[in-house]
Image (cartoon, rainbow, N blue to C red):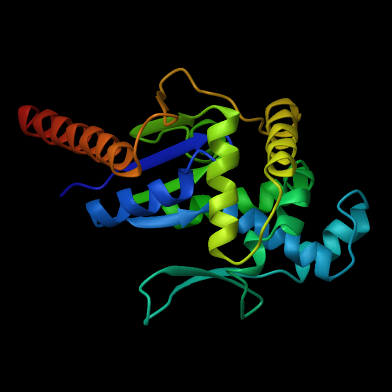
Length: 235
């Protein structure tokens, strides 16, 4: 199968990460979790008592931060490591969720993480999800998806996700957190969340997980087949 870059953007709680992982698995591509990178950066700044609004702290934080991904041989799932420590569960907590949008607005942090993401995607055959993948990280991606869902659906899904990790959080609190993240992500000066002109919008409010994965896999295969046809016609 040919290799393309699939960029999936959208609002918090739309199921971007789980969908992107499943799409990558179906296609035999590599999944890159940009959200996990920002969450790991947030955890690093929280644990190091560094302020994202202090330029010296930002410089210090970036110099002492190394984010990597490794596949867990027992579960087969990709996990996030911060400076050599597995932080996969820690970065999904509400404490990190409440601060991640603030970290993501800092120009220097975004610049560093975008550069890392672009290096990871150079060889193609990748699926990456986030807020600015189609607009900034991979503006030349062969397939761009913009995922959305209504706030009630997203809040319920996020609550279930936290429950599975043993964290019980009030639904209204999650709703407020997601609404605030939407506001910050869409209005920030640096790489705001936008739907680019050539992205396909998918509203997942009434779709099952399997349906949204199948839809994107189908589109990806069409793009790959069209590229093959185009290449053979120009031989």
